[in-house]
Image (cartoon, rainbow, N blue to C red; front, top):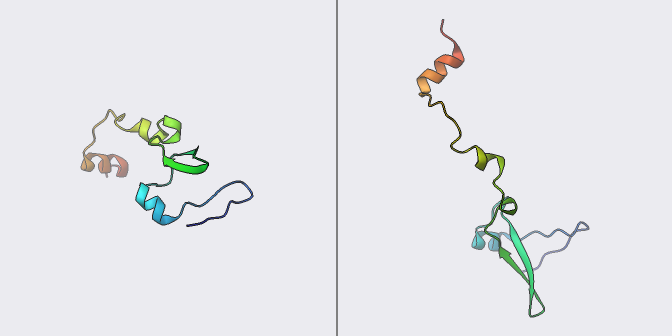
Length: 78
């Protein structure tokens, strides 16, 4: 499989390879040179190992609302 490097130095990883490695938007990859060949590896870290804003928010809610109670609050009582 071949791809072309853009003016910005970007490449598109072919879908077959993305699927095989489980690469999704936000996945990190590492580049290396081994025996004169370019090697691309899945990094296993997202965003340089830092949690993104959604990961940081998981489990932070302290109020446990029931759906009915929340809908009543949002709609207001008539």
